[in-house]
Image (cartoon, rainbow, N blue to C red; front, side, top):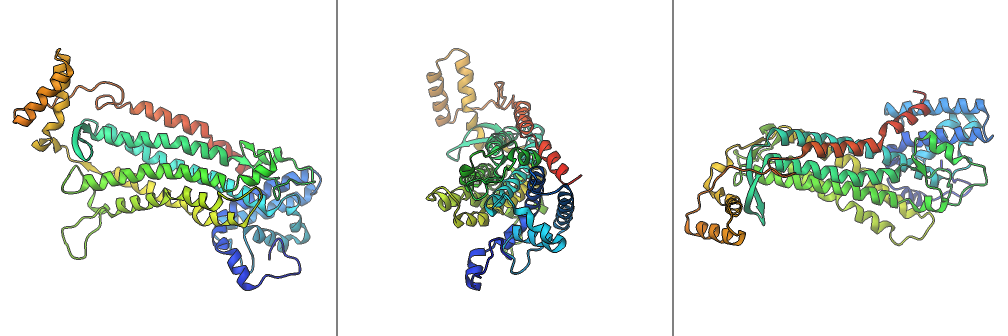
Length: 444
């Protein structure tokens, strides 16, 4: 079954090539397609294209199909092109001609658009929750190990004193920063394209404000041509948000691999979080962090993939846009699995509390001595020269007492302020409003 089917049938080869992986990928869109249809037919009843009894019957049938999808019983049958065709086919089998009425006033183009917006909005919520779980874990560990010192590096050379509190807190704040991009992507996804039809509107008196409200969208894509132009743009900007988070997690994973190596020995991963070697019995490999690093690096290519699929398309719909689904839809699960695994291991890492007993790190206290001399009245450049000459002559004896008090330093991490910023972002996202709207549609 195809929604566009008339008398001419495509060959099997054409069908296989044009459908591609749509049947497989569209299974991810099933609940969102049903929610979109429920909102659409509720609006159709309000403008006289369905009767109240027809609406009641159709809504009940759609809720049953939604329950089948939740339980994993929904399938897209052989010969059925996509999720939209399958849902309409099920309704028609169960309700006869009444099931064919749900497509009035819309095109498969805006049906796909609203499915993707609802999917993206929901997956961004899930991603935000995984980000926050890692953020909270990093902050807890930052507080727990705030007094455990470690070397800081520039150019991979020992530089200045740092701490595990400072290191872990840095990644927490990076995630809070990344959430600003996610917030922007969420707001773009949270706009209703339904009613744009094939990109040029409809002669039916559609109430687009009603479907916007029913689906819990913050606003709509008003211009119907722009609503169609937004396909690819929403995915691209979302991909940039996911890539930003992935970049933070990839860097964290690299640090963890480096600091866990015997040459550094700054922290220890739990044995159960490592893997072994088939030939070297002593090996405890940080495979999990290596895979997190690789998968997050691959996610950072996602925006460029989408750009290359869409950057030379004029306005209007083109089948090129279908290709985005292959790389975009699975990206959320990939990132969330990395976030969740990073959370699991960061919760269990154990830092080495005696790193600075090793004299190779003594020189990192040189700046502390320069600052002490400058505070006592010696010109900074003279103090710098004196300490440098003492180090070269082997006379430098470090004082390992630190007095860092300014905001964001070793002695004043400001984790509470960063947590407040993360909380403000979540409050602005207001996931509860969307959940309430969807539950109303589902009669829950």
